[in-house]
Image (cartoon, rainbow, N blue to C red; front, side, top):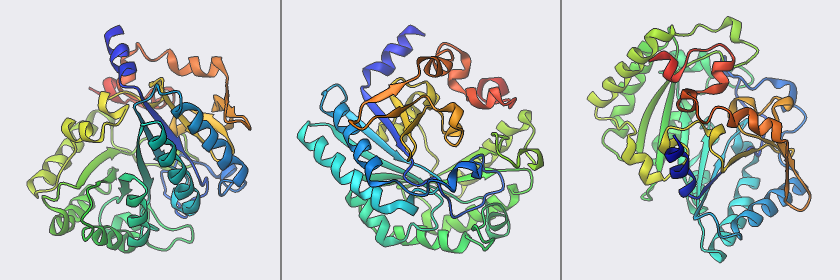
Length: 342
């Protein structure tokens, strides 16, 4: 295990997740990001943008990291598109000065990802995209409606189709969250998707079982029994493959050179990984970003950070545990995941 830790540290990749907008234009039934915080902080202020830039510069100019991987997350990050472009421009400039590779990634619901924004993001170095579609429109629009309850499938899928006409290289991960009632609908969606994305090595399809992740609606969620999850997920991967759709493998992750995904390591446990919320609070786990008590620190005016050692150690204790290959947070919530479900 000590060899594994050394291997991770040797990669010298700084993994930074930034939440530019804590608000979201969707109301997904299984969302774990409850609304108590979102209303207060919709987008990033100019003062906080300045702090984030200083934080990035302070770390890049040390010369320690060979690559900085910036992941844009939310809420819905494209609600604050201006901040994304501002920080990517700045970071690309600093990276060039200090000979550090910068790679961008965005996790978005895809509704606002029109072809204009897509091309701009590519130009700014955002080469990795994740968009979620939870089956054909019959299921997806019930699970992932707009804030006003209106459907989202058609617009998201049209946005994805438009990206095919771009000649640049990129990685588009199309994720489906799996519940007991949408399995057939996901297959119907894959049938449709195969007409557009089959054998295009820029598009990859992934499947994850919905879990009770701490959201307000957890008690009402229908989830797949833990013992059946692996079988159902494998069934979907096999179905996608038979249709000529790509599924991610180790070679794909190596091309991205992403950490911690490349090592199957929980993001919260990777020592050079931090999540910055748009009020300057810092977190380690994406499942906790809307819970103030889970903050592990904050960014100061000069871009330095103040960390709560006890909060950091809360995650560090899992590094030598089998749960490092699963999800410690879901384990704490009573979910059977990762190595526990095998």
